[in-house]
Structure formats: structure tokens, C-alpha cells
Image (cartoon, rainbow, N blue to C red; front, side, top):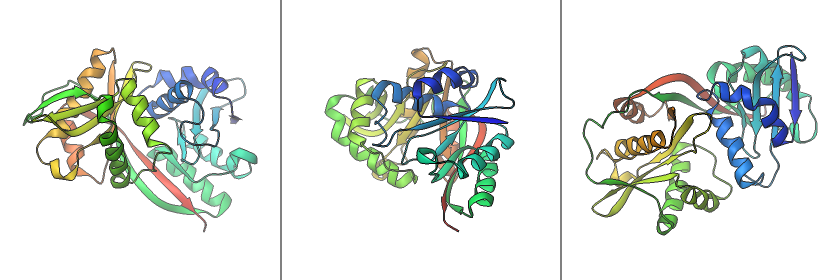
Length: 288
């Protein structure tokens, strides 16, 4: 088995792009991160440059796996055989320079567990905090069973400060790393018409993001309703509206992730037509 590492986004997209696009649902995170790096610059997630890699079962064979990392965030794995994930951990354990640091890993649950076991065996590090997720794909979009009051609209520049605050609240509550520059993310997504609001009585009450259409897919997220607005169906309404908007832009697939520890979100998305694809795992490491 052969892993190749690189610091070049262009090389990564040239080598692994077709492989990632062949399974856009399972590889949605890598596709959207690579697109954002190309559009907004390699420093969009932080000051340190990203690293990339791709795997072949044999030299000269087809690409069968890939990863990327945008420091300080964890490595993100594409769909890949568990043996490839274990080999990646072993290779990274002996790597040098920008490839030597491993703070965590995310991806399909089986591949992540194989990586974690190999990383622990090679380095003595142990698993720290983890988040279990489920990837959903939209089947037939249906209206929420209890349609909320209000209406959908795209976010505008005047919503900037509110959305920055909501992004910060979302990352704290969802147990995900803080964005290096949340204001830049919000500005870029407003400009790209990728942030959606649900408005009730003229007041924004919930938001949902939607990624650009890539390889026929768009990923919905983050979805956030402030605590004082919950229980009124706003999350269902804005998610359904953002999904419909993505389909209208030409997406063949709309995708989203849920935290399995949150039964409410897993229920409401299924009620509007989302169906499970695979279980995923995001975990970090600490010294043993």
C-alpha cells in the first residue's frame, strides 16, 4: 500500500479530485474544504498551511483514499479501506515537518477507529474526546409536519453581526473547534448566498448554511436555533428551505451531518426527507 503526502492543493486536487467526486456524499467534507481553500486562500482556516495525502493499494494503481488537514483542525479522512487508514496512522507516526503533528481525526467511523488503534499502537497516545455523527442524504423533500410560522430568506450584509454571534454560539454548543476567523467565514458565505435565515414576525430566529454545489452535492450546515427560539419548528423550516434552494441551484444530492447525541436533530431531519448514509466519528488524541 502506498501513501503520498503533499503540501500542494493543486496537486491534491489533480491526483485525488476525481476519486473524491466519484462518491460526493461520503467525501463531502474534503470536497468542500478543498473548494474553500481554492476560493478563499490557504490561510482561510488558520495561519499554518494545510497538508494533503492520497493512497493507492499498489504503486501506479487507482486512488482509493485521501486525507487533508487544515491546522489547527484534525485530519479528515475520505472514504477508504480500514487497512489504508491504519497504514496512514503508521506513516504519520514516523513523518517529519508539517506532517508530524496529529491532534485528532474524523471520517467514517470504521476508518477512524482503525486509524486511532494504529496511532495509539505507534505513539502511545490515547483517544480523548469524541463526537459520534451521522451523515444523511435527502430523499424526497417534504414539508415539516408542523410548518413553522414565518418565512425563509437569504442572509444579507445587515445580518452580519447576528450571524457572527450565532456561529460562535453554535461552535460552543456543538463541541466543534472554533473558527480561526468567524467574521471572514460569515462575510464569505453571505457574499456567496450560502447562509439562510428563518424569519418570524420580521425577526431572524434560525439559520442554516449551504455549501456551493460541488460534484452534484451541497451540504447543509451549520443549522442553529438560539435556545429562546427552540421548539417552534424553525430549524425544520430553515433546513427544508436551504435544501430546496440547493436543489434549485442544481444539486443532485443535499447532505447534512447530525450529532448522534442530539435525538431532536436526528428526528426532525428525517421528518423532512433525510435518510442515513453512514455513521462517522470525530475524535482527538492526548498523550498516554
